[in-house]
Image 1 (cartoon, rainbow, N blue to C red):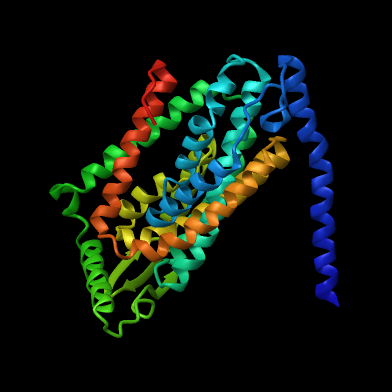
Image 2 (cartoon, rainbow, N blue to C red):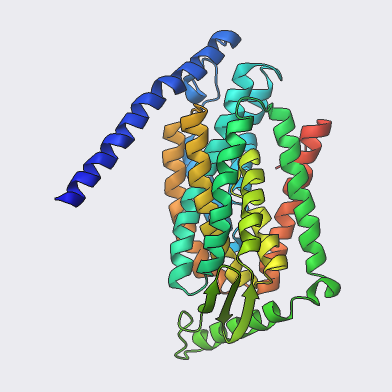
Length: 373
């Protein structure tokens, strides 16, 4: 009975929040439309003359988004951004209203939070799947998530409605390009010198996968992450017999800055978490995807709530619904296929995407130079 009352109270609270938020959403968008005075058939967000969206394209693109995020623990939000900004043309559409126009900023914020809906869903599914497979470092994910809560609420509150599409695209590209170059360095012999434990664990995991493929009775989950010690200042765990250690306070601080920057860019933060987990925590890529996903999920849930409830940011629900179906499909496939890809190639896949996407949006945002998709 008590549980039933609590459930009803939560549902009533959620309904109240929605009722309060809905007029605010409508007000911000309607004010922006009134200022711009666009004409034509209603399109994106019901804006007259707005882009007409094909939800089938959204579904197919979201499958790719879910797969890439659940495979490398990153690029879900970035690939979602490529889809919304470039494939659907929402970037050029927002820019058409001019830097200071309200509609430019409303559409830009809508792109940011739409990206986060996709990566948040993929992160939730990926976290669960990797946890079942013994490839999620739960204490590390919790520490990152704790730090991410304040960061993912702070930035939407400070920047929503204040960032133009051109500046957003430029910064988006610059950070991605930097991370791609840094991870490329880590794949060089010099960069690999400090990653002996990660390399050893990756080799042991790959060997077990091959044994399983050959018909051996290998329980990969049983040999997965085993926490040996966890205190506020020290955590020790093993993965396929290799021991790893870290101080939980470091990922708490790291999680704050990563979530703040990711929330500003409107992405999941995996492209920052991957180098953090491989460099600072020294994890093999086989553990990075699941651990990154858990931290990303917490950050995305907070950031979405902040954008939509505190800053009244609208989204196109018909598009989001179709894309979430694709995200589910891609996020289920990813963990099942990633174990067959060598650790070094998972990182190189990340690098390849980072360099191209980073160059594309840096050149477009700061110099107006367009590269093909």
